[in-house]
Each structure stands twice: as structure tokens, then as C-alpha cells.
Length: 384
Image 1 (tube, rainbow, N blue to C red):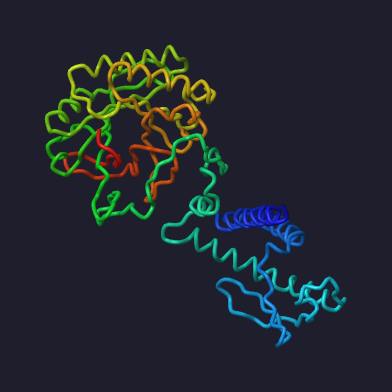
Image 2: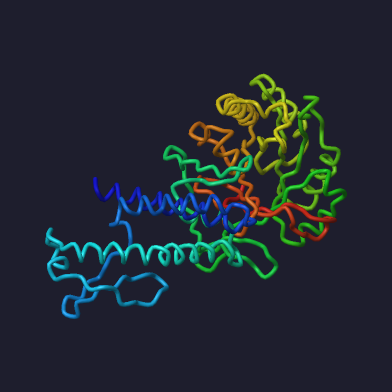
């Protein structure tokens, strides 16, 4: 029980220092917060001395040294042999010496920890979020409405077995997954009317294996269902060039009945095309919370998602759910969605997601021959 308490206090101290570091590195306008948090660290540290770096005692030389990572050893006041042996008795002088030692070293301890955290934040690939994620692997951490959210990683949700060290970045900036020297991931894109006219033969020659093509959407204010104006051209082009095709639909359904209506619309427009990749339900929020579906509860949105996916499955297609870390922690009850494929959006050079996902959209700024301007790039971990 004591060990658990010490670990808990140590995590609290670490968290307080992280908050302090983020405040200091933002704009310098949070000095008052630092004073308050540093004071709290000192109070907690007084309650849990065992959570601090321990004193290593040299009885023969009558000296004690405090080991600090990244800091040289320094001589400190002598500690009596009785104290070194762990006896309960301790003179007032020894107690005073230790108290003075702790006080004098406290600033150095805090500075050393802050220096290490600053290096994590300001490194070439550093960020406050990345630092927080390294400290708390038991949580999925993200920024939402100017706050850092610590969502627990749910045991009931299926996890992937991908290894971080197997992700590699090519000279061209492409991410791939490599096992035993062989690339096992698959290179894909997703497109909509915003990519304009696409030369699908050039896309195929670049090595693109598959494409998710936007079929349509429901208006986030009007609630009207519309077909993407480039959908038919993109499906015909991908099928003709030999690029495997899937589709996605951006939902704004607020009831199960509307979700089924969206599924019927999608299924109707798949007729006549080769659709070997999944049919995707895009459950993102509208920026700023302006969408008609943004006030749904997690339970409502999950039921809507299941209704769409089951309708797609009944029609003979593979359903998939698209979302980011907010969708997969805040908007959906993932414990009810293990039966469906997941397509995960996270724009960075590391995949921050423990749950089982089939496809990762890692950038919105890709460049592919045959497509004017930027395009989303994906890697998938299976073939369809």
C-alpha cells in the first residue's frame, strides 16, 4: 500500500511539473501558475521523501551523495553511521543537516526535471502533447476545446499488434510498415471534388494501390443528402486504371432512421462499380461544433453508426468507420464497435492509437502524380 501511495504521489509530482513546463514554454504569460505549482510540488515532496532520488551513503568516508540523472555527483553533509544503518534514532543535528540538504537540492532537482521535459518538447519532433503521451501510455491524450483530455485506454476494445519500430519514413516522406525487411503495408489515397480532375493512370503508375472516393454527404445545416460531383468520374477512373476502390460518406444523421437513409443512398450509387475496399462512415464533428449532429450523445452516435454499418454489411459490402482520436474516445462507444473495420486519421510520423485499425491516414499534404495539389495519404495493414 505504501509503495502504491508513493507511486501515486510521484505521478502527481510529475504531472504538476509537466503542467509547469507547458506553461513556461507557451508564451511566458503563466508565471503565476508556475509559482503555485512549484509550491504544491514542495508540499507533496515533503509528504513522500521516498519518491525522490535516494541518498547513497558511504559509511567509511562519512559522506552521502545524491545521484541525479544528467548531473555530476556532489559532496553533501555527512550522515551518522546510525542513520546509515537505518536505526530509528537520529540526532537533531543530523535531522537538520538532512532537511537543509533536501531544501538546497530541491531547486536543482526541479530544474533537472524541467530541463529533460523541455528537451522532449523542443526537440526536432517534440511537442507538449507528445511529451504527455510518453508519460501516460495508459491514456489517449488529445487537445479538445483548449483543454488536454486524458481518455482511458479501454480494455474491452481490440488492440493492434503493430510495433512502433517497424514504421519507417522514406526519403520522400512516405510512411510504411516493414517486417523482416519487407514492406507489408499498402499505399493509398482518399479523394473528393477538392482534388479536381485526376489522371488515374498516373496515380496507378506512382504505386497507389487503393483509393477511398467520397460518394457524398449530408449537409450539416440543410440535412440534404448530396452526391459528390466528382464521384462518378473518380470511380470510373479508378476502376479503369486498376486502382482498388472504396467509398466514404460524411454523415450528419441524428437518428437511426436517417443513418439507414444514408446507407440506402450509398448502396444505390455503388451499383455498376467494382468496390473491393470498404464502404466508410465518416463520423467527424464539424469544426466549431456547428453541425446538426454535434449535440448527439455517445450512445446516440454509436447506435447511428451501427445502423449504417449493418445496412452496408447486409448489402454485401465491408463497412468501416472513419475518425480521429476524438471520434474514437469521445464521440463513439468503441466497446460496441469491435466488429467493424476502423480507418484512423492522425497527422504525424508516429501512429498514436492502441486500438485495432485497418488503415491510417497520416497526412493531408501528400503529393501524387496525376493529382493537382495536395491529397490525403494512407497506409493500410491488410488487403481487401
